[in-house]
Image 1 (cartoon, helix red, strand yellow):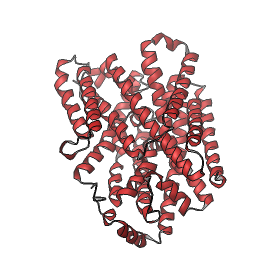
Image 2 (cartoon, helix red, strand yellow):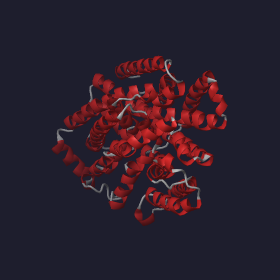
Image 3 (cartoon, helix red, strand yellow):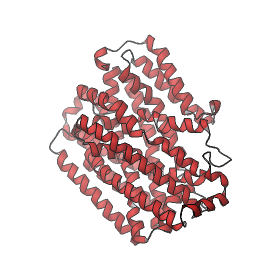
Image 4 (cartoon, one colour):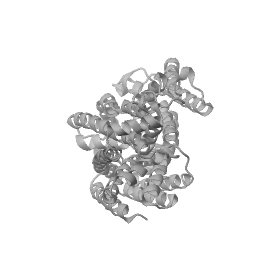
Length: 480
């Protein structure tokens, strides 16, 4: 075991647990559900920006994304920058209206919002099942990512690494709840920014400078230097358009980021969050993907491309610095997984259990036990599921991402901005979009060359518009 890398990582984990204990003490002073799931709606602008950005930047961005850039070249770096408006889209389009409605209806989860807007138990049940399935897959991606990261850098067994991570993130999430998540996300976001800058600088230095690296990439494959990537799988217009829909526009329907719009303190916090978050996403996307693309000149023979960032850490950074940087991808992964754990816990307890048994909310101590138990059980389930991982994390993550977007995007957007939207149209959209996405992905069908997300969202919108006139209109007050 590489103790030079392990000690800084353990120090970072101690800081994370300190944040969780602080959040636990704050939690004792307020309503449990409001505090545990949305941090008592008191998130400041800086924290809002960091938690929104950090939640989005996970194993796929820190492990899978650079792995794809290693394989496809600089064209993938250009493609990754499509994600820059993520925070602007999420908080700018949804933020203010979402927060107003959440406070009006006292909503704590995305499904609370959907029930208040559409007044449909069937819709809420369908949304909950889709969320649980997709989040399970996305959490599995994060666990696999950290397993490979620690396996490569610390030279420990993959399964041991996964269990160590599961214990860490599971305990601090269930102890501190949402407040612990956003506080640690702020710390993790700063660590990610510093870490990616250090790694990119070290890669360029180890490669002899940018001109020398470009020359080496040219000798490996000239297509690595073009906007369209390697010749066998070009990053053409249809691919780029599909990717933009999947990882930028479609994120308006991603519950783990959308729920941040329910937690901020005031309008000033929202505006600051949009600006700071966009800057953070820009820096992280550029530096980490560029490190992966340029890293091929230093490590040209990887068979599992997802290991490029861990390999670069070992090869180009001094052991002490590498140990500090190890906290950066760990931070990215932990900041995504803790948010998903809170979301799955809230779905199981708040959206399903309490909706079916509303009188159970009277017993506050029981709800506390069930909420924390749900967090731990989901952590255990994901841990068991990832002990034998697949290759190329990014494709598995994108599949789950698309499943959530086809389920929630039009239901959220039209529910907020179209007064005539009703449950019939929403359910038709969810079923059509999700089933189409699963079918096209499973069969490998690309209509007109586009990724399955594009026709699935198009058909989902069409289904909403066609079915909506057959449903009962919701009162204008709920959608104002």
